Length: 53
Image (cartoon, rainbow, N blue to C red; front, top):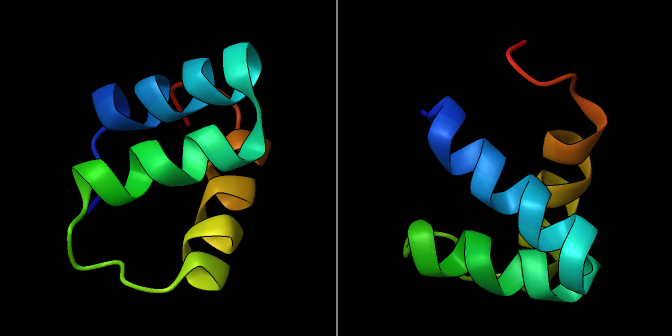
């Protein structure tokens, strides 16, 4: 389960440093995500969601 705090970290990273930096951040937070393609898909889903929703 993704916490809103973690989602905010990923969104801020995406906005500040781009998509692949957000992938790295997601994988740092969630060690179980081993595949970059999966992580990229998750990042894109996270940043597409409105904050707090």
